Image 1 (cartoon, helix red, strand yellow):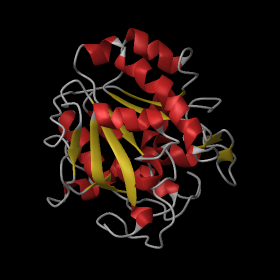
Image 2 (cartoon, one colour):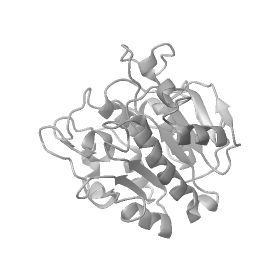
Image 3 (cartoon, one colour):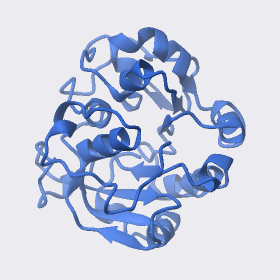
Image 4 (cartoon, one colour):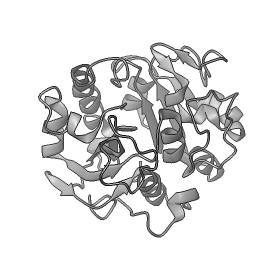
Length: 273
């Protein structure tokens, strides 16, 4: 999800579903983005590095760092990005901006990694809707080991109010939790906002005072005790490190820093999908 600080979501009357979910599942109360703007957040969460410094396109700022997508390919496992509003596989959008509402390549990190070119064309796919298309089909037939879901610019609240995103999530999350993969106990969902707003800092990974550095992160899994809250400092590097841990992969970039904390212990994560 996009561009809202923690207090704009948690406790907000515009996000009744997310707050219900936070009470029923797991909530990281001290979770932080890495910097600003969007594109580096998504690269940080999938490579452990910031990549391009701004919201540039894949052709302007190709990222040559290894990524979790490449790690998964290397061990012969499976991944998919489901990008809502993207018209064709692994689409970079217009060369000058990557911005083609309701799709924005800035929110689709796999397209930035040149090493993934062939894999991206297979695995970075249009989402469709919650009830039809590639993602809906995967919920019926089986999810890959790692799924990255990128809602469009309205549903992720980049271009629309919090209430629009909340309504969308009230349909998306139940679609996943009612799937066989989730009910079989081997799936964890991380629901995370990319960055906050309203602050001035750009060095956010451990900044606990700037409002623009503090975002909501929810953990939904069968093994997470309902109502779990953790005040441990987590960030997008923690998210990557935890995903790699659950998938038995090495830790990339800043995720390998011993000071970056796993989310698995706080939320009792044992899932591997």
